[in-house]
Length: 231
Image (cartoon, helix red, strand yellow):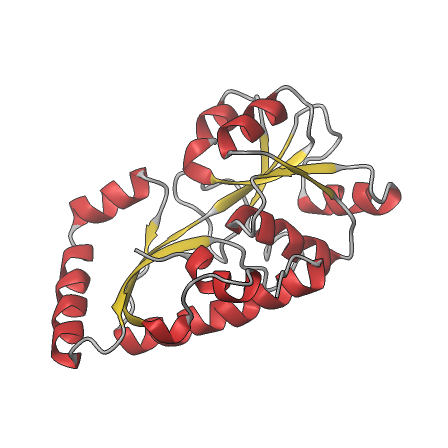
């Protein structure tokens, strides 16, 4: 299983131990939305409110992330770059600790995988102002996308796919890809993935190969502009 972390690691770290050419790309399985969250005490009910507040007080707002080029951190850095705002990273050892501190109001903003925080949004402990995908997330259908909220073309979600070592037989790749595509059409499988926080996104081997490499270019560019690269 591969994700944006595997796509960007060879450019983010000096010695990731592999590069994109060491893998054969079989199929993307799902995209995983992040929710853009604010603490309810913040006078922010929309993305435009957040951008306005951040521009009025540059560097005053903090955002929580596990750092290390994680999807949620890169999504926030992309938002900062596209919106021209300065929100300061507070690094946590894990998502759980970051969520606890955001609920307590010690950090104001975060992108977090939707499935882990929907209960806190429903309870009013956190406020979701946008979802990172270009389409709305069925579990929280009333939360708009960043694109709908004025940050045009924003796509800052995670994803999962299947890859193998280089030089796998093309016949094997085609067979596994076809089997996965068939499995992912099953209603119970799609419902299970949705319950785990993902939306099925099937692709062919060639489509996933192009997507994986495009994601590496996109996120390494974001990381470079944010000063995160070690290379």
